[in-house]
Length: 396
View (cartoon, one colour):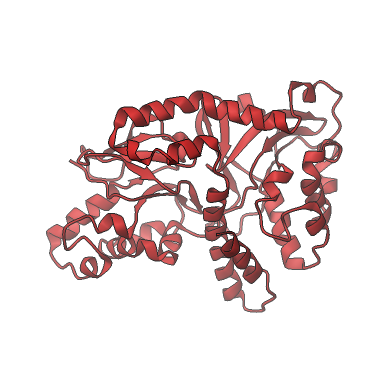
């Protein structure tokens, strides 16, 4: 996966005069980068949950595992912060500006190099500003491929396209107003960043916050390990993963992944594909080909689905697909514990039951005998978020 991640970055940043190819590369970059990032971000809590995949057959075991996260996720974030030297003492000195604080902390050498390389030091040290910066640690940058993985490599960047990309990535970490952690709403919320939107119809400048049990995650993937680091011109929240903005739709991500060929065929057959090609805010529990293969014919593979002509079967398939879609963004950290979540399927049989996770989670249809485990979770799209599941959800 790391090799693939590096290859995509290398391909994306090759000089080209073909705008169409450039945009296509950007879409592929975002999709693969996010999927790769999910895999690299797994922590102890996630490892515990993934090692117990069998608990999907036992609701109480899944609930117990989710309940354990109330303590373990928060504790691990605190331990990570303490291991890097962050503590409440960090806020007791007279603060400098955002850049001053970053320069004075050895955990931010990669971030400082990126700020200098992209010419953003002046904006982030402006005394008249009141900014919020989600600041990735050196460890967060180290998860990226070269040349973005450390200060030395960042300092050596000369390619204008790479610098422009890095500038947009940094701006995607900055809010134009000061927001402390206690001002972040419990549950899910969003905030516009200083990154310019690609266009009015492409939502690639918004970050999504999930606050559960007091722990804040950003875009479902990065954890705020230390919040409210005061600066004279704003506030810094320390995060453990670099945020990468999305540049592909839900439909685009599904089409690009051969594991979703049955899902894509079903969306086309039911005329639902267009819903996921434009703007919007959706959560899609996306069944893989293996999930569809568990169904009886003609719903068991892409070829059979494409050949369906019976109107009743198409209508039933449409309702099943809509049973996998929520009309808002719900990251894994937003899924609650035995939360009854309303989908776009026909009422009244339009609710699924969800259980939260840390880079994973569970979901169950009312006519399913067991939960489907989400793996991977939180694939960010311009118009929503995808959770991959190995079972088709069935309504009553």
